[in-house]
Image 1 (spheres, helix red, strand yellow):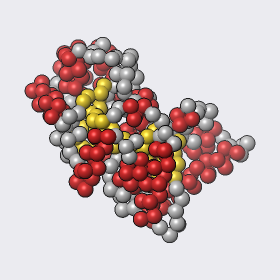
Image 2 (cartoon, one colour; image 1 turned 180 degrees about the horizontal axis):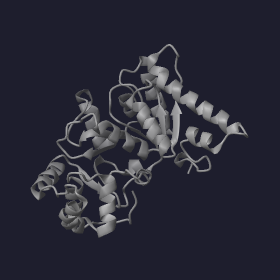
Image 3 (cartoon, rainbow, N blue to C red; image 1 turned 135 degrees about the horizontal axis):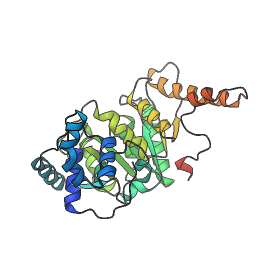
Image 4 (cartoon, helix red, strand yellow; image 1 turned 120 degrees about the horizontal axis):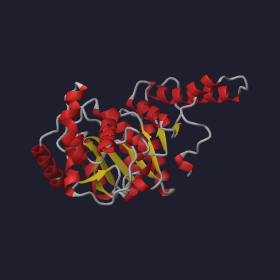
Length: 305
């Protein structure tokens, strides 16, 4: 999502943007199209009923009272809104077509402006993988990187702890909801000394559909994603796929072929090896290259810019 940098929004426009995004059937892509077409959220809200009648779809603005309650809840949580066209919005995240138009945040936004590496992995991680995650995160933080993860049990928690306070936690719930409950203290520490980000409105308990959305933010914030330990069918590999589709680096730590929790990492390494072998073959067709290379090989990784 792109847009002209806006340092300060009028209160009416900011309120209208929140109201527009919270309206039924309005997601990031439609939200961006409406802003572009009508020049602002105030005008887009006025046009919603007519658009619904002409398009045969129900578009109705969410109640202003509901947004007023949300704004008050954000204030009580000590959080702030960040809109997609404000200067402090993370630049790499803003490159995604599906970038969240509005984020809620607590902490130090400058952490998201530094070079970021995402670290993800299994919730039921092995003790060795947890130690590796903590050590890698600590080394990355010492080297000047911000470590981004999702505050889940296992690898996520170890990554946050190893990098602390140079870490960004992205949660699938509202900014005022601690999830998982075991990480309530860690989440509060990150909000106080690191950076805590949420896309969902305050008071929202996490649902299954929220986690892939959270994963796209984790991948989008970072120049590269490191998978420490993960099964083949896991949210960590969804994050890795999203990172690859965005043209970012995808890295994985290999593990024993006898350990199911390492199969996802080994799978990623195998895919990368096959892609390199195909790329070296002079007879490889363009379609084979496109199937195995998620990013344009001529483009430079954001990690190296």
